[in-house]
Image (cartoon, rainbow, N blue to C red):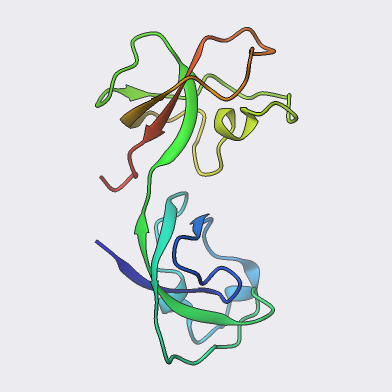
Amino acid sequence: MSTLTLIGTRLAETGTEFVYHGEADACEGCPYRSQCLNLAKGTKYRVTSVRENTQTLECGVHDTGVNAVEVEPTGMKANIPSKGVYAGSKAHLAGDCPYTECPSHEFCVPDGVEFDEEYRIREILGEPPHDYCMLDRDLTLVEFAPTEE
């Protein structure tokens, strides 16, 4: 189910994905608050369509203003411990990782996923993109279902 919201003009393209982090200090007193702050904090969204022939509105957060778009919650890719992993089960992240240069880092520490929460696995994607884990973890790349599913 899509939701109409306002996002920065630089992000307002079909297919763009972002994690909604909630209200910024600059949102206080904005007349468009109810149209912008209508998403679930910590959820990853994908822009499904950009409203045509709409006006760009001024924004205290986005320097080039905001546009109306439709968004839907989307799954998040993550590396999780391999033991007992199957689609439909719940899992959590293995823990923080200091190796930011690793090709898997974005999946070991994905934006929008909390370390202490469990998420339902939508799909098993297979092997992580790294050749070996610097923390000697046995990991599997999965896609978590959107939090609203």
